[in-house]
Length: 116
Image 1 (tube, rainbow, N blue to C red):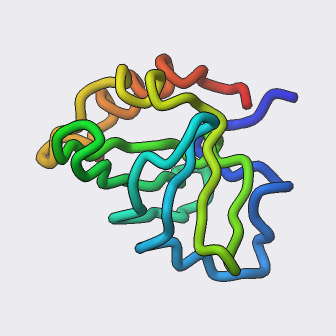
Image 2 (image 1 turned 180 degrees about the vertical axis):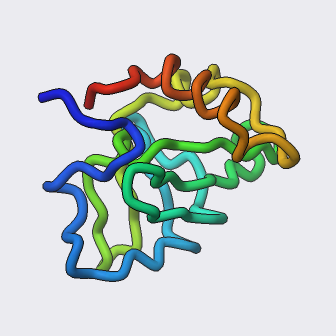
């Protein structure tokens, strides 16, 4: 299936719910990577910012909504379709530019623009 990497998968999130993901733990396919520090749920421009803590030396990463495979509100967890290493190798987070189109384009290229 081809969809926008900046949109949540239908099976991951019900549009009838308010996300409220800040503080949720984030699980890659091979373990916990951190917790949600910020979220943007704008249609076609959705993402989460994950604070990785000590895992990669306090680094933050932006994960497009299309990388989210499941949200479990009871466990307060967000499950991502990428490994820790894939996330670690993503384009470097910069607090000043992470909302800019150039950075978003690099993330789209890295995470597979247009596909889930």
